[in-house]
Image: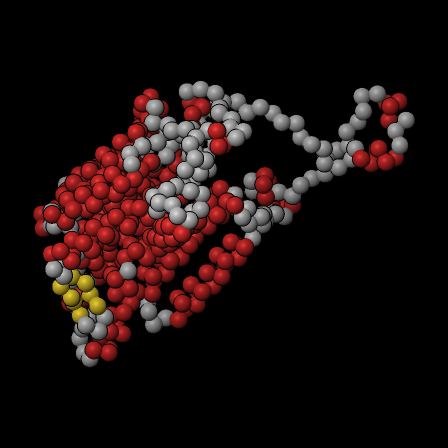
Length: 451
């Protein structure tokens, strides 16, 4: 665990330190597209954050290769090199797309090629564990098609959910942390070395997201762009493929005894194995809903719109930060709920806790404008938005004799809350303000091209 944490910290540090220079590079090269009709942000923001994330990935793999406890991953398996090859290809395509807006079909083809590169180098699904039957070996074509499909779905699911500041990086980090605990348990508890690559990939992916999040939280100073979203989607898919298709379920000794007993005992372990997409259940649900919505309307499945889950949270009244936190909550509930159930399936307290937390999540969704107010004694320790509103003082007229001639109704109308005067906000260092004045778009449809 110490070596994994060291790899995570190095990856996070390299990503964090490189994001600032990458932001300046993106501004200098003009990688700041105009605001489109579907965008949520109000001013042009530089992209290319995936450059820092890719170098964080390279740093994490380099450090792990020089650690005594993790060096065996590179000696016994070709998966780290397969991951780096596929990641480099998808990263280059993402960088070009962030700068020049590549066609969606070209990106889809590049995603398939990147998945094929990993398959050729050994990162593929070789078999599937099925409860009650056992291990089912896949042919070469079946394993290739299943691997490519899983990579493409995961990449596009993460790319689709990347619509709010800090949303994609945070959700992937939460889901990957749960996946890391599951993969580490298989590697450490059962002594299965085949799970070590997936554990390493998950640790590096967490470092990439944690290092980028401070720059990407609302208000974001830089976006990861497609170079970042497709990259973390590919790493996430590689982790799931490694632990699903490389770890032999027979090594877990799940099929001892009768078929019924073995199936019941293996069910909680098979859930994360057979359904690796549960770690990104929210992005996948958003992806499927977007495809159905656009196809039903007679549009291309790749046509951008403002119908994603995070857009709907904003439309019903949630603030930007609250919408992101709600998506974090559901991602953590699904990912950690599945992992906990796989460990203690006999405990009904886990199921009860998941049901209760789901109810809490539904209440949060149904109360978009609910803002808790702190008591009077705690107002000094909370942000201003959680403090109670105090009555405004009565404004006085400049001439005393004028108030004498006013009627009581006029005097009463002057009491209460007085409108605050708008003060112009000076240009700061956020977004495009680093190179010019703050942009103000009164009509967002004029700021970009309709999707």
